[in-house]
Amino acid sequence: MKRFFFCLWILMGALWAVSPAGAGWDERISLFDPIGPLFDPLEEAVPGLMVKGMARNWTRLASHERTRDPNRQVGFHRTKRFPSIEWLGELELRYQATPNLEIVNINNFLYDSAFRWDSGGPYSRSTRRELEYYHTTDRILRELYAVYYYGDMLDIKLGKQQLVWGKMDGKVIDIINPSDNRYSLASTSDNFEWTRVPLWMANVIYTFGDYYLQLLWIPDFEPNRNPPPDGPFRSISKPSRRSSIRTVNSLLTGDKPSQSFLNSEWGLRFNLVKGRWDLSFVYFYTWNDDPFRFRRGFEETLDLEGKVVERTFFLEPKHTRIHQFGLDLDQSFQLLGRNILVKGEAVYTLNSYFPVAGEPLREDGVKKSNQLLAAVNLETRFRGEITASSQLQLRHIFGYNSRMRTLGRPQEKDRLDVIFGVNKLFKFTDNRLGLFWTNYYIDSGSWKERFDVKYALSDYVDLMVRYWAFWGNHNSAYGMYKDRDEVEFFLKYEF
Image (cartoon, rainbow, N blue to C red):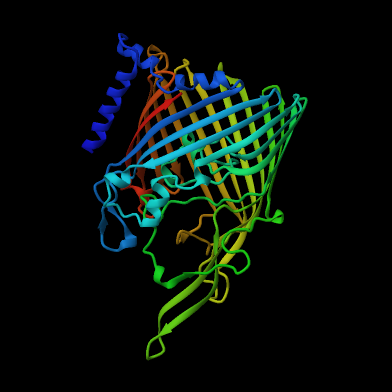
């Protein structure tokens, strides 16, 4: 802990040192941009080139000394004091080759120093290698695409990219790119830009009047990257029985779809803007980003009396094809002299799979159903400084069966989430200082809270302190992590 604050002190001292001499503290902060001017000669030598980037530190500090872990069956297990001390650098190059052609390259460089500061953590060697730094070209080369503009009618974007369809907290129709979910419940929309997994795709938009039609062809496939088994936000619903489970792969496809044209993903979006209405209809023919494990047989070990002492199940993880139909709308209106912004999103998914308890052992142990995820968000401002928002999010399973399970617990037929937030900016700081409070509640009596204090030191430097708190029964979605509360420190420099 002392080393963290020592490094922060050194960083602030360096900020003072590289700022123009003779300037006051406020002026030094506002002029702090040591890297940006270094690229000015390059941009002048190469007309049409623009260089941008950032460097940030995101440190997560566990607020509990010890955490209960039923999987280890030893009462308490100490988690890492620092779940992460993440240093992320980004370099963005944009080159306007012609008035109609732009080439974009974005590279990310990540290093997590928590693995050096807190080497006693529970991570396995493979998990450490995956989370400690970006060690593959695929992760470093975050985006690389070319955009061709044909007048105001046609945009063609080819290459590795991320595409944002939805704008909701909770990712309703933000369904195109898979996600890096290493921090699971402690993830927020202000970090989605860096946690989406970019894909190689063709993205074509044709605009006519107040309408546009978007077509996607995605030959690339990447799965979600879920919380590591030894991380602070893995599922801890009940003790593991790994000794009784073996994973097998299909001889034809393995646990990922093969890279063939027939396995491509396809997307379609139709959008119209009329007055204050912004409305879209979307369709996505895709693969489920999380593999589902199908039961493919079992073996039993018997004692001398013929009784079963151990049963081993063989499970095959497979990504399954799904159809997703979605709706997105924005509308603003006046109510009692106040401007209200309404956002709504919904996605209907065909062919979702769920584990089913109590099926005969020779069956695959699953049930296929359709499900709906819908959300409505209302937002308004008070005196220009305070913003309040309220979001209702509903999940519904069609063809529900009471034997369905999720993480070993009974699956709910309906789940209602309520997200409420209040933000305040302070005019006397030129809106540089902001306080943010967000509450996430599930109707089963489980919730999490987020408290943020943000300060924009200048156009280049941002600071933030955030606190996460989890509440509820230890078997509930958020309550199982109630001893995983954490404080986050965030420092970002953009050039």
